[in-house]
Every structure is written in C-alpha cells, then in structure tokens.
Length: 120
Length: 147
Length: 154
Image (cartoon, rainbow over all chains, first blue to last red; front, top):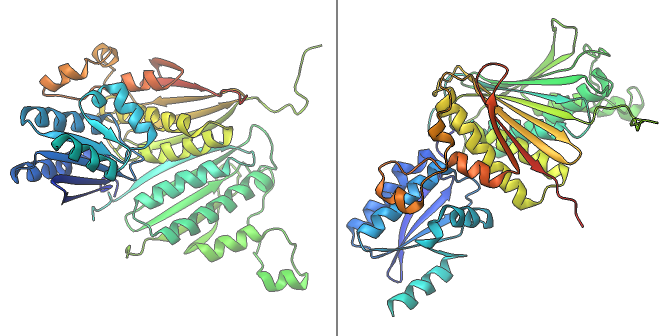
C-alpha cells in the first residue's frame, strides 16, 4: 500500500545514463535508487542523470539517499546531474547544499545539452 | 502490489463550519488512494464523504460554532468504512432518501439530495446509533482490484 | 467598548487528525493540511514548505517518538487563525527526542564521509516554518509546534 510509490526506469540517451524517478523519494526508495545507480555504474556509465517526475514528496530520508549517490559519484569519478525537480525541491536541494555538487537542470533536454557541452 | 496491513484507521475531527468538509475529503481521498482504490472509486468516495460532512455540519449540528464533526476511516483488509458523526442537535436518521422521481413530482423536499447521492456512490451505507445521541452515518466501499 | 466580534464565533478553528504510526500515513496529513492552507490563501510555495515540514515532523514522530509501533497514534492538530496556521504534531513519546536530534546538521561535506547521511529533518522544519517549538504533549509524548504566517497580499 503505502510504500510502493516510486517507479524507477533506466535508459540511455546521447552517452548519458538516465535514471527516471517517478513518484515519491522517501525511505522506501533506497533499494530502488541504489540498485539503479549500481546497474548503470556496472555498465560503465560516466554521465548519470537523475530525472525526476511527479515528485511531490521528497523527504529528508530521500535526501539522505541522494547524498549517498553523490558520495559514490564523487568517489567513482562520474558526473551527476538532476532534472525535473519542482521549484520547491530545487530550493530544498540548494538549502541542503546538494546543488553545489550536482548540476540541477529544469528538464531532461537541458541536462543533456549540459552534459554534451561538458564532454566537448 | 504490496499487501496493505490487515487493518488500519485514521480519525479526523473538524469544526461545524462549511468549507471544512474539504479537508476531510482530501484526507479520505489520500487514504483511499493509498489503500489501492481505483481513481473513479476515490472520486465517488470524495463526493459521498463531502455530502455526509455537509449533512452533519448543516443539519445534525445546525452549523453551531463549537460543535464538532468526527470522522473515522477504518480499513479492514478488503473494504473501507467511513463513519461521519455529528453531535445530534437535530436528529435526521431514519429519513428515507427519495430519488429524483419523487423530487420532480414534488413528493420530497428539494434538499436532502446528499443522502440520495451517498446511497448511489458507496457500496453500503446507513445510520448507526451513537452513545452520545449524535447522528452516525456509515459508508462502506469495497476495494476492487486496480486495473 | 471592547471589540467583540458580532458573530460570536471563536476566532480559532481546529482540525484534528489521528494517524497510525506507519510510514506513508504522513501523506494523508500532508494532503489535508495542504487543502486547508490553500483555502486560507497561502501561496503554492508556502503550501509546499508546509507539506515538507509536516512530513518531517510526522516521520520523526513515527520513527523516534513512537518507535514504529503501529498501535501508537500520531496526533496532528491544525489550528486556523486569521493570520496564521498553527500545526502541532504529537507522538506517544516512548523515546524522547535526543538533544542531538535538535542540533543543526553537519554540512553536506561532512555527510559525504559519514555512514549515516540523514538527520536533516528537524533542520528542514526550522528552515521552512516561521516559528518552531519542541515541547511535551499533554499526553506526555513529544510535540512539535510549527507556525506559518499568512502574508498579506499587497
């Protein structure tokens, strides 16, 4: 019932591994997000985009999961970006300090352009 | 799909003032949605619950400031029962709820459509006795598997 | 002469909500509170701030105060006043809130090196709400009282 509120999908676009996060990012999301990250990393992804959709609920437990991903990304010399966050959660991510370590884009297209520019 | 726990419940209490039924509506909808009810059924329940709260506010409690409307929502593993209780300033239980035919014939007052709507929208409903003399309207909805 | 409101209604309106101590139920309260706040005239970003702060307060109550005991309840009280909304969240306080939970969180740089990357909840509540107070509930549990002010539209 109450803990099945996140769908995670993995796809690839122009050299960027995209992890779509559709729904809530709370404590219940940990396994799904970590598994998705591990899977794209195993396939050798250097550029990873967390693409949020319909995320009207991200809480501090969810933020802790995302900090965990950022920690791994920094260790593994990968590049991480996020897109699709609501204005509210963009603000929260700035408050927490995540925005200093992750490029935050309005949408997927903008994020892909950002990665492409960085790779050039 | 994750199996909901066998039973769980939420309780709400609002002032007897028009507008607060919307808060109940949102809470019950959120609960029902998360229990796995289909969107259409959640919409039915929202309307039924709003009408029940309006009855409690306007009739049972006669819009008296300070009187409360209490709502309990109990999930028993297969169905959701919502009880709306007022403080019974005016009893109205036992009223037969006439359909549109009687209304159009003028055999029933134009008001009171709320109860009729409720009977059409939920799987079962009726009045219960309460220990404190208030009106208690219960409404049950079974959960059909989500498509 | 004293300014007594002619309609004699109390200026406060209280909505109470009791939830089981199970993660996920905070969303029911978030939706109810958001509905109330929107009707009071709060802007969309303030409603979002309220949702986040309320979620953190309730998950704290479930995880810490009530220690995930589903039999225990979380009480959410929403008090509507002409110029503000007061939201209080009380648990049944098996586990009192540790001072460490109330201290400001470390920086994100520190959390990169820690195993536990959480602990942002109470800090978020303080950042997002206009007034925050941690007290003991009448029931003896922990209580968080949060106030969000209704800014007058110019």
